Structures are given as C-alpha cells and as structure tokens.
Length: 93
Length: 240
Image 1 (tube, rainbow over the protein chains, first blue to last red):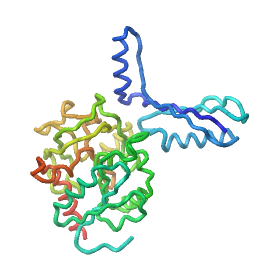
Image 2: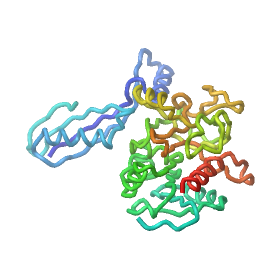
Image 3: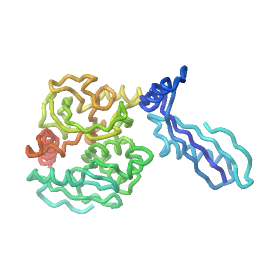
Image 4: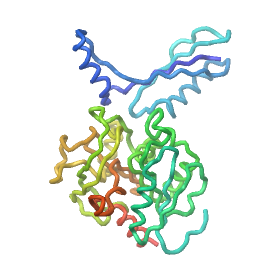
C-alpha cells in the first residue's frame, strides 16, 4: 500500500485571485519580499498495491481525469510506501 | 430510446443532486406553448427522446473538488454526450456550463471570479452569433439583459483553445455594458475576452453563465432570456 500526497496548483499565467489577495495582505503584517504565492489543493489518499510503477500510473490518471483540471491546474504527487511495501518512493511527475 | 410524442418540443431538464434552477427552468419553459419540458434524474440511463437537453444551474454535488467536476460522471451524462455527438441540442446554464467544460464538451474551464466575490446582478450581453439554434431569433450586436449568479464564472482557456475558438467563432455571448461595449468594467467575473457563452464546433452545444430562464416574463423584471428559448423552439419545429 502507498500513501499518496497530491499537490494541485494553478497553472502559471492562470488568474489566481486567492494567491494575489494573500500576497497583498502579507505586507500589512510586516512581511515584505514575498512573491509568487499560489493557492492550490492538497489531497492525500491510500492506494492498495505493491507495484509502485502501476500505482504511479494509476495516480497520474486520477490526477489528469479528476483530481486536477489540466486546463487550469498543474499537479505533482509523492508516493510513500506503507505497511512494509517499500520506502519513500520519491516525487511523482 | 422511447418514441417521441408528436407535437411539443421536448426539453429534458437534467436534475443532479444540488441542482437548484430546475424548477425555474421548468416554469420558464412552461410559458412557451410549444415547449414540453420534463425532468430527468442524473442516474437515469434514458433521455426519453428529447429535442433539447438542459443542464440547469445550481451546485451539483456541492461544487466539491471543482464546479461540475463530479456531475460529469453521472450515468446520464454518458447519454448526454452521445446525444450531443449525434448533433442533439444541449444547453448548459451556469452550473450546466461548468459541467460541460469539465466534461470536455466545450472549450475551457472555470475559475473563481476575479475579486473572489459571488456575483448576482443584472448583466448586459452582446450577441456575437445568430447562426446557431440558440440565437437565431436575435441579431448580431443585440444587447440582451440576463442576470448572472455565480462564484466560479471566470471562463478561461489555453492558448490553443483560444486560437480555435477565435478561428471557428465559438463565442456566442460576451459581457458588455448597456450600449453593447465589451469592456473590462462590464466583465462581472474576469472571464477571458468577456466570454459569457460559447458553443462547440458543431454549434449544437451551448454553455452560458447567465440565466436566461430567470427573465422570461415581464412580471419578474424582464424578458431578455426569451430569445434563447424561442430560437430553440423555432429551430426544432423547422428541422422536423
């Protein structure tokens, strides 16, 4: 089994009003020099299976078809083997 | 598919969990004598021989994940896609438009409104095309007033899609001011190029953020939405 962490972020150049609003708010707290804030989504899931490359392919398909909308969002994911089925499997695409 | 009853123009209104404009749509269509509206449940597998499928406004599946993202997988959506592939007329209003983009039946995707505010107001739209079944009774350059009521209406698309949309003239309505000027001030949500409504390449699927069903009787403050339904009724009657 793998614990999967999926990070979904707005594509570069896509209007991100939440990020822009936070970027304008931080100077009010005295933080300067903070730029390129993006607000996205963090999704965790557990996937059965021992074959890391098969799980990776499945998760990639899940991301493309549902978890992210590739027109407006980028995604990355990480796999972490749990229950003794391998160690940290590293970052996804 | 069941055989079509002769006579009325059949509008199948698809109800998803969280839809909330299906009654308005039913009521509005009831003001057109030729229209024969009926409800369809999203878990159905039969469209019941519609002339037009309507995806109404609302918050299907609570807008979970992204607006329209889950509704797209409802069993009936497979039938809707097949119906559209065969040239069937589909109109998606507000959440219906969001569902059609998520289902890749229309170009682009929806972002949260610029300014992060839910917008609910009367809105002027400029008619860009009248050679569609949805706008044939209107004139190019006409300004119609139809309300908007949404949180995720900033339509956007990738550069390739935008090129395709431009080349094939897929934009049917743009946000404008009362005089028909397409300006940034008149854009309620930050949609790219003030896009309020687009069709697919076949011209048989329309998505629009404004709600024509809400302005079909003068008693509710306007009749700016009637043109869309009158066009559909006329078109269906003519091609029969």
